[in-house]
Image (cartoon, rainbow, N blue to C red; front, side, top):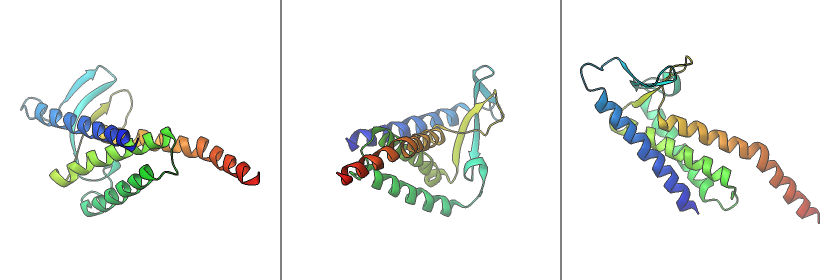
Length: 164
């Protein structure tokens, strides 16, 4: 079953890297540099940004720290994914999204020394992001759902089984 979750992670990496490749080539055109391409008017557009930091461009230039955090987080996610104690689909799906997101941005950091961001929400003032960032956010949300709703139920169930 873990193979399925690793394939989901791989699909996220492929989508992330493909969109980044597309955007870099799209914005290599001289008439599009420092501009945006509207995808859905007043909702979302593409804008090519190089992010040398983390979220919201914090810790700019601290690439060694991002390497360490990425490796540690990837190791932790893989540990929990392959740990038989955690069998809930929502938890493992969340981990697969986080793994795919970490790898998508890690590839950029290793190869380019920055992360390519391109998705701009036009209906709200929000930072420009990429598919990998979205996958990490969705994955963390799914893991939190598991921890809030399912983890507590499992603990109660185990407690009732031990009492009998």
